Image 1 (spheres, rainbow, N blue to C red):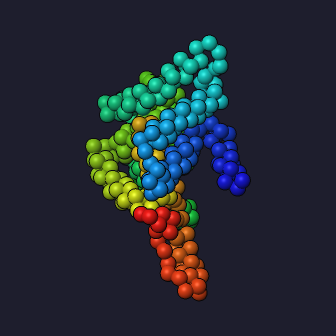
Image 2: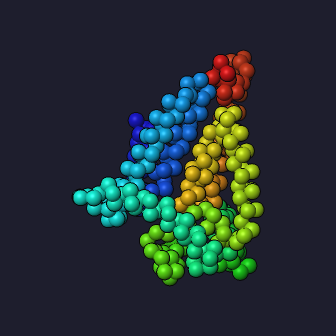
Image 3: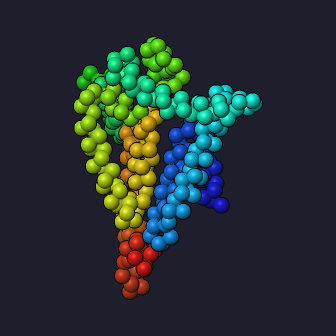
Length: 278
């Protein structure tokens, strides 16, 4: 009951704000954790993966259509499904079209060359960013940082319209966002991105608490490359998601050690306790 309540409260925000990202994050995270459980239980099969894949695509399409209806981008009636698929394809194609316009110099994103798109977790670092004025410090060094993410978001629509394109489609792919920040040197950022992703993947396979919590976020970030406007891995949530399981693990482990020591038992690992046959 508590789990369902938390899910419902979480889903309220994206539907009120008419955004899709948070819902996709929730779905992908739950699926990754479920797949990990099946893998360690020895129940993971091609059939199960195929079934979950079909469910994921269907659920994702429903989310897309639901938000489009809220935004009045779609109207129920004749030709509804053709319009829905057409809108979905437009989002995919338009994102790469915007990327091409950026490389060609026709489209310049607001706050380019400032690290805003790829280093959002720095400018909005939890708890201390506002306290120490990280954005103000960045501006003092000449970085064109917006006063808020909303300001940048609204300016992105204008930038696309000014480039002679449909401004309502303001997705630029992760490549476009990285290009806006670093130009052709964006490969360095992707190299670091890949290094962190590999570490998270290894810990995920080992079923460590940090890996189980953090890798789904990394995976969702990678899966959103095609349509990214705000790169998930660059958001301040990344810091929170990465640090929270570490804090919980330290506290839980120390408390459990104390309890087990009193009972004369040894501290079991996460995997061996949940899946003793592996």
